[in-house]
Image (cartoon, rainbow, N blue to C red; front, side, top):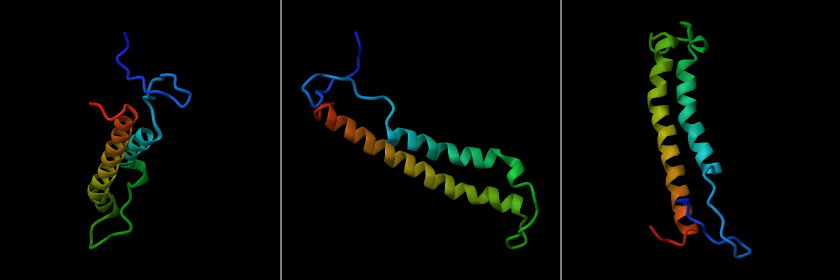
Length: 94
């Protein structure tokens, strides 16, 4: 027996909610961008340009700390909105 909720569709028939939605894909991309940007070391292994005497290699990585937080907040908000929409599609039940 499937545990998926079957909300009514436009023609009145019941259908499963999709597991992959555009909001979830976008949230996954938001979480992947900082990981890829910091693991792709060859893209920032250089000394110039310097900021405040700090080589690019270091300030680039430090810049990604708050940027990663912003991407994570964006992913969180997308998932919360998607969960709210899924709850409404189920009819507002748990």
